[in-house]
Length: 169
Image (cartoon, rainbow, N blue to C red; front, side, top):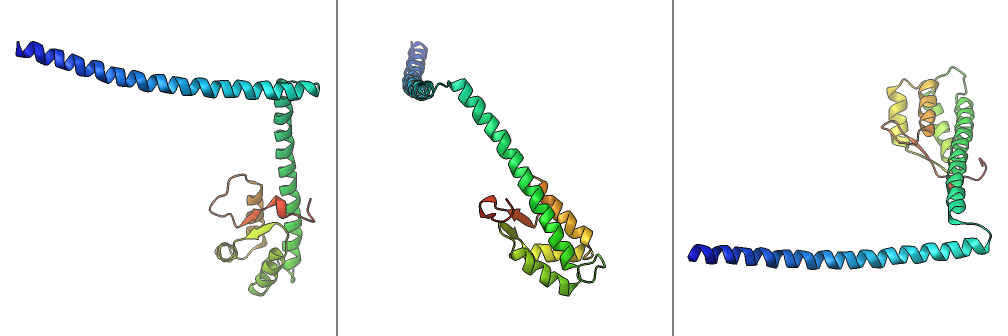
């Protein structure tokens, strides 16, 4: 008899646990229904706005995607322009035209880089990498080409803030 009661108690506990889980799932389902209805309402509102302007959501989404592509292209063009301007600045800093940025030229180069709108320079890292790579112009050019990469790496010393760009747009 005791084993039958124990089995019955275990079954009751399992039923209670399942009822609790069922209640949780019911609440989650209710919340999802509310959220789904909100999304439907937002889609309806967006469709209403767009249809009043002679558009639909599909066309709108397509335009948003096209805009993203254009913005990415503009970002790459800006980076290329900044890179070109930086290269001119770097070659101008090599005053004795020996393709080496001498210590006295580094100060002038950093001064010019600090004055470059929208460009942030990690000066300490810049000096360290430049010295490690022999102060050559090709080393500095390599640091500039890192600008074209979307992902920063260990050698990244320049970061561009397009919002602060004034004369390079």
